[in-house]
Image (cartoon, rainbow, N blue to C red; front, side, top):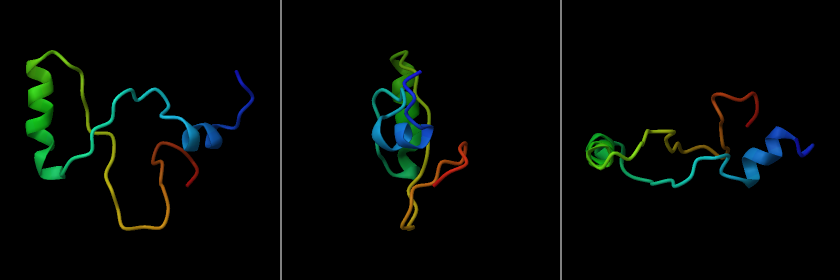
Amino acid sequence: YSGIPREELHTTFNMGMGMVMVAKESDATGILNVFGEHDISAKVVGHAVDEPAVFFESMEFR
């Protein structure tokens, strides 16, 4: 354990996400299907909102 607060880790590093692709929500199913056809694990991990903050629904901080 590095002693770095969890909040700082999430604002500095990708926290093990690997590659991230940004796409329109309407394209998500097709993109996930293409990854699946190539045996590549993929999932939707979030969405963009028009807010002046970043929210981590699984965490207790913004």
